[in-house]
Amino acid sequence: MRVRKASHCSYRIRYHMVFVIKYRKDLITPEMFSFMKTICKGIQERYYLYFDALGYESDHVHLVIEGAPRYSPSRIMQICKSIIAIQTFKQFPEIREELWGGEFWTDGGHIDTVGDGRGLDEVKEYVRKQGRDVNQLTLYEFNH
Image 1: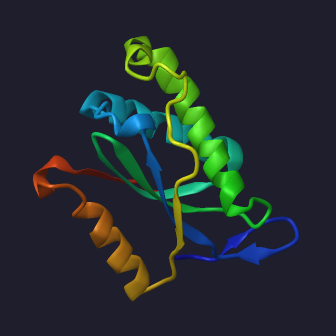
Image 2: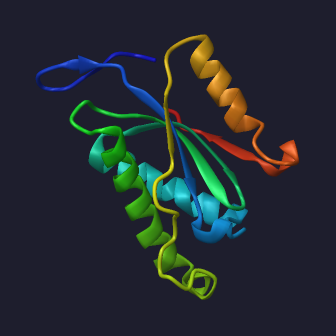
């Protein structure tokens, strides 16, 4: 992981986050995940968050993401979850029938910090192997 620079500091901060769909509904399709990747590229440009990897199963997504120190981990989660949910509901309005409460994600989520070397490799391997069937997982590597 490279050292990033802001106007008054340099930093190297990376997280592994997991967002779960409300009611653990199996709603994420390859088409929807592809759309979510596009949303993440927009988040990356607007908020200076850098996505290293994305993985998914039908009921949750994994993100390996670098964030600036101005954002707390919970704020990064809030930014990503809210923008992805709003845009996904707009693009796939039919999922509102499955998510009768109007929320896309469960409250909260999971956050790990990830370092260089072995820790990062282990987390990326874990993300890659998610699922009951390894072939179900699709991993997208972002190139910066």
